[in-house]
Image (cartoon, rainbow, N blue to C red; front, side, top):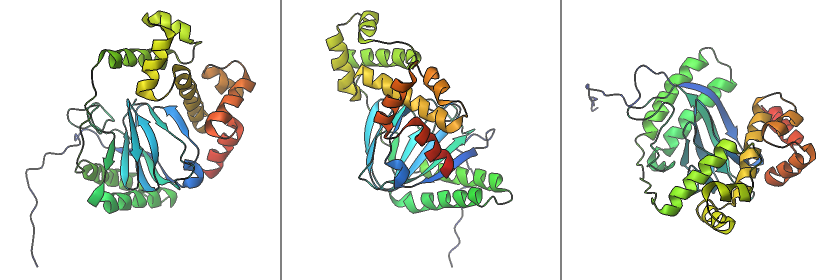
Length: 285
């Protein structure tokens, strides 16, 4: 038998004044992942996705990613992400929401910096990370005594393992076009509930509508109007899942006065009506 000693001079990556807390955990199969989760972000929390099976496409922040089995997706607090439809991929994932994460040098509830990739290839760490998620899921669904405390320790272990996974730097070009794009996106993200037209954006940024659409689609893959719709529908999805507000009220909150038009856009984007979507998720909860 060989006895191994660990380094006694431990410098924790997670700041000691913060104890990470699990808010929720989901084991999501392909009956759910085949429906897109449109553009949204999370406030005061960090979300981590582990791909158990399948593949797909995601937009996180300003980058588009092709994802596959054993990838880890990091959704920092406040970072927009868009999960496209994965109809034929048979994707299944673990998804968990965490708060009170604080790493040295990063804002609260951030696991990677904006200069690094939001998708990590777990490689040799995959089985251990998946096992930790399985244990957390069993604790929560089994309603075991002390499950919250156990999950806090398991989260710390999982985060420490994720931080051992090699990270890639993402060098985003600071061109005149990319700067303009970020300004346009920031404006839309702030005002997407309002009546925004191409003409309004064109006047706001002193450019032609043709150039506006060209630059926006070149970098995001969406036209400005498509982007606005996905921002609104993504917010509506969050409200349908997390609140008891009426569908009519939710339509108004995301910028649609016409309930019929909202329902049509929602069904076209998500693949089912708002009412069915709410029932689909809350029933399975």
